[in-house]
Length: 191
Image (tube, rainbow, N blue to C red):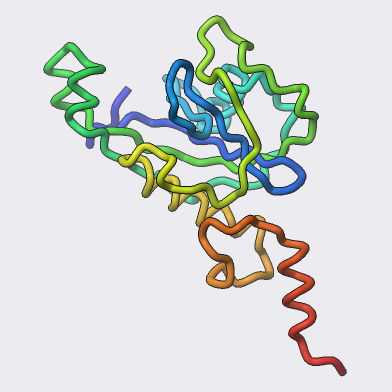
């Protein structure tokens, strides 16, 4: 299912633990790490697709998470021609397919790490996982997805930093809001 511009509708998932670290999954048989993501099937809403993908890729159910927020609009990335050639034998489909458009969800794990099951389906996406600081190193993301990851993380950070100025947070630094708030409060003049 492609839109008129050649983009496949998709969801991306940023899953947080209680320390605002993100779930980072290692692709099966590869040395690449990424967030869970997947296509929206015909008739599915983005939220329904997110819950389905969350279960298929991470093994979590809706009762294991809380939705904190989502991106306002679709974020798009183009898939380079060399990847399209490897993945698509049908030349006609390759000509019309450009890439993915994604709605990104920010979730909080309300369950336990032990609720995560990478082999919840017969075709697992990940063979390892870890918690990682919120501001992931962009060089660990496949190059054509880097901009979308940066846009998604930057936009979703507003849900974690409601009273903080984003420009005060440095890309790549751990997102320790309690330390930032204490430091910010100590800078305020006392009455």
